[in-house]
Length: 505
Image (cartoon, rainbow, N blue to C red; front, side):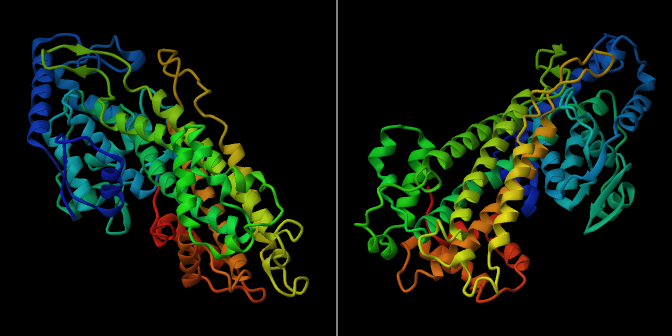
């Protein structure tokens, strides 16, 4: 475990995963501390001078014309969080809550927010000591930032709301005391700053992208298993075909499939058969998986840019300027999350089609119907395909873009919003569904490869088959299958199935 220093280098999705899921420690760089202090000095000078500056000496949103006296600032911050912490629904997953803290602190470390150094350091104390804010997942429209979820996060810094500490959900004050963290009393601008911005959608989005990248490569593995089990050909993966189209993701997938199936006895056994070409779900794996990879790469670039940006309002600059703008608007992330959801849904769509071919005795090249001996007495993997079909159909509904919707808020002052957090949450559901679909393909393809023995699959495919068999035995007759799905799902989500092949593309 190593220390991640904010403000010293660009925050990456890998950093977010290390902190959010592996509890790596975080600190502020010297440069970040200097920038935070410099911006805070400008805020304090603005208040002392009596200047009018939105969010510093005024109310918020449609109440921007209401002047606030310096002596009312503490009450204003408290009122702001109390009135904005109105999220509903289940809590965000703990890793998303931790990712929010990290991304929010990193944004403030750029020195444009005007919060106190003590405030950002307290956010990092929550991360380093394992206090996780309980944040309802619903209630953000994605501009003026993720107001409701981030207000719930900010409340925990002040000892209000709820948090999880050492596995137990409790009042925030109790969690802070147990962790040895002093609660904050927020000063001018801090309530607005901590609630404004895009940290929620960006946090959920970062974790989505990490999981989607693993899933995309794992889908190559399960597709190679299916390709071999269905007596497909690797000819469609020839490098010259993919150079002729020149999409980078497509070429990478084709190369991956060539690696996985290298030295396959199964493919060699029917090299000179009279089948001219395979069905699209086999022949077009590089084109479909590759397009999804390119979409994931686009989403990654957007989200990493957002997590290294100042996204609140107003922004403070070193020359003393204070500008009210719209960096809290989540449109870039909203579009990226909608695209990501569509891309991952397509990985599941084509996987289900391969699973269908594996279980259908009319399409599976001589394998037993539903991949079971004594079918009729046994149902085998028939209903696994039903589950995959249900999940891909659900994904088609979830893939409807959130970003095409908008609804006015705040007395029409905020008359176009991004719905980016809804898009990020939908994408997370799509990723979860797709992980299950790929796990189902892994089970079916492994079962099918058993029936091709003694012929061995390719070098990588054979290792993937062995990884499945280490967790799930061959199905000789009907038995409870749901535990097998969960075992395969863990192989997919953790990246173990991909790692077992010793291939990466």
